[in-house]
Length: 451
Ligand code: SF4
Ligand code: SF4
Picture 1 (tube, rainbow, N blue to C red):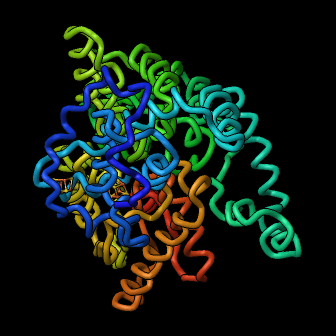
Picture 2: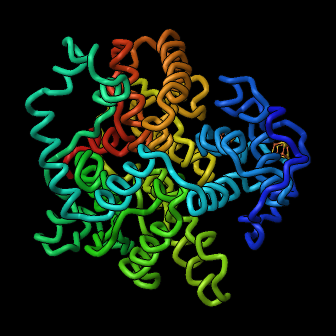
């Protein structure tokens, strides 16, 4: 433990006094989480391990540690990947504790200019306004059509511009310039099944950035759902899930977004609320900790909403006779699989998506070495902790190269989270690895024949 974080220092005022933090006492300091923690493996410091961070959070909660930069920095360096939760035998809800702590820090301490700018402009303006998002998408679409990212990364500009701006060019989403939500509003907003009788009535979550970028992923999702016998609705009043807000401590904005989504989707009219972004899915399934002060009726309502939310791969894997009843291309191919942290560790979804992809005729799915190791994307972590994010990414790329050595015929990696797609795609490009990186639903939709 960093000696500057001294248990003798008395913190005032007691910001953590009335917060539910009892779960933190379940940590028995066994250390079984240390080996799976990407930041501990990179930095080798106890305060950058799950156990060390829990020690800091407990010290703050019990008012034994001062809330100063020495305490805050290790908490900021956490990826919130939640690999430690999967490893923990005592079921410590690490993610929830970290996010509550970050909320208290954000509400009570002054922020740096960079953090304020990111929060006020990106999180509180761009992400929550559909008109602003669409405008950004149009502008970014032009930016990419003019090949400005290439100009920045391959000319003298790469030497004079800040490193994170240069590196960020290859992580940009594929902005489409239009909104999927808007497109289907113009088509009546309710899509019938395709080629099968109706079995389910589901609603579809489009997200914020995903709504105006990666349109191929959303189109593929809708195609597969309809082919599986779903009537699909796209509620127009839905908004950003709030995950980036929660991860960065802005719980107030996240609460507003959660209420908007509850009102937009409701609970009773759908068999399921489908997401194709692991990070969004994890957040939509964990709204209730944002409202721990509500009465039991309100809490039950959040739980009912959360139970309806399901990742698209998990949903499709439970549809009877899917994919066997549909016509698929049957060319043989090895496909590499990356498990997004917020699918595996936060939602507990891992085996079923892999089984589903392996059921496609001719497809052999091979998990990457350390498939469930974080890629370093982690929301806006790759913007605010660029060096550590890059170090974590390099480990992921080493895993990709090792797996490719064993399976040289593979041409595709699939991963079910947009942040991971952008991050791994950028890494693959930087090392000239001959692979494409796409969402699993895009891969499945490519292999689905007309029927
Ligand atoms: S594995 Fe769980 S109980 Fe053990 S140190 Fe880590 S968080 Fe604590
Ligand atoms: S969430 Fe990830 S980075 Fe943070 S302590 Fe747990 S394993 Fe380490």
